[in-house]
Image (tube, rainbow, N blue to C red; front, side):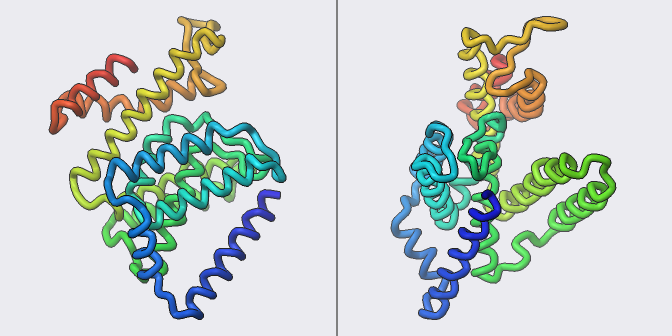
Length: 275
C-alpha cells in the first residue's frame, strides 16, 4: 500500500508539472505566488511549520482509508508548499524534531518518525527548487563530494550485509537521509544567524524531549533494571533517549560557553543542567 501511495503522488506531481509547463507558467511564478501567500516573517513561518508538524503527530492513528490519514496527507502537502516557499523555516522545525525520532505518526501507509517525515519533505522541496531553477549543483564545495562519497561507501558496504533488510533500512535512515539533509541545510543557510537558528532549534528540541521524558515518569517510563533508574521517555529503550541527548549536549555546552547573546548562553546552561 505504501508503494501505491508513492506511485499515485509521484504521478500526480508529474502530470501537474507537465500541465504547468504546457501553459507556459514558469517555476519562478509559482514560487512568487507562494511567496505572496506565505508570511515572510521568520518566527511566523516557523510557528506555522511547527504547528503543522505537531498536528501531524497528535492526530489519532489512522488506516489507509481513514480520514486521519487523509488529514495527514493534507498536512504533508501544506508542509511541502511551505518548504517550497520558505525552505529554511521548515528546515529549522525539521532539526528541532530530530530528538523526537521515537514519535511515529501511524497511518497504515507511511509509518515513520515525524523527524524523518519532515526530512523527506524538506529534501524533496529542496530538490524540486534545485531542478526547476536549474541550480546544479546546489552545493559547490568539497562537502558535496564528501556527502557523495559517504553515500557511495554506504551503498557498497550494505550490498554485502548479512541482514539486507535491516542494512538497507539503516542505510536510508543513518546515511542517505542525514547526508541529503546536510546538503540541503548547507545550501539554505545564508549567514551565521541562520546557522545559530539551526543550532538553537536542535537544543530546544532536546529540552522539550527531556521535559517530556520527565513528565512521563508517572506513566511508568522508568527502567529499573541493572544500574540506576533510567528514563526512556518516548522511546522503547532508555539507550535511545540517552544516545540522542548526549549528541546534543556538546552543542549546548558551546552555547553556554561562547554563545553570542545572553539568551543563547542561558539556553545552553539550562540545557546542560537539564540533560
